[in-house]
Amino acid sequence: MAQWRKVKYVMIHPNYVKDEMQNDIAIIMLDESLLFNRWVRQVCLPALNTAGPEWKVSPSPQSMCIAIGWGSIRENGPDRKLDFFSNQNNLYLV
Image 1 (tube, one colour):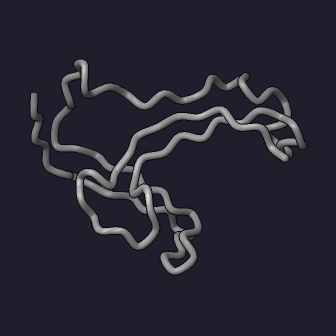
Image 2 (cartoon, one colour; image 1 turned 90 degrees about the horizontal axis):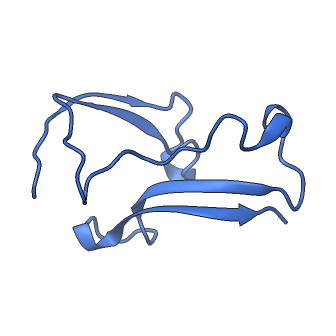
C-alpha cells in the first residue's frame, strides 16, 4: 500500500561534513502524517534509561549500544530503492 507525501521542511545537522560523512543526520517534516501499517511504522528508539547514567559521559568498553539507521547499504552506490535499508542492531563496544 503506497503512501505519497511531500517534504515540508528539512533540518540538516549544523555540523554535517559531506566528504567525511560526519554528523550525517537530518530531521524531515512531511506535509501530512503517515498511516502506520504492516510496511510503515515509527522508528524504534531506545528508552531514556537504556544506557543508564553512562550516556552523559561516554559508553565504556563492553557496554551495549543500539545502532539505528536508514540509508544506502554501500558507500558511493547508486541511489536506488534496493540500496536502502532500515535496521536496528544491538552492538557491544570493543
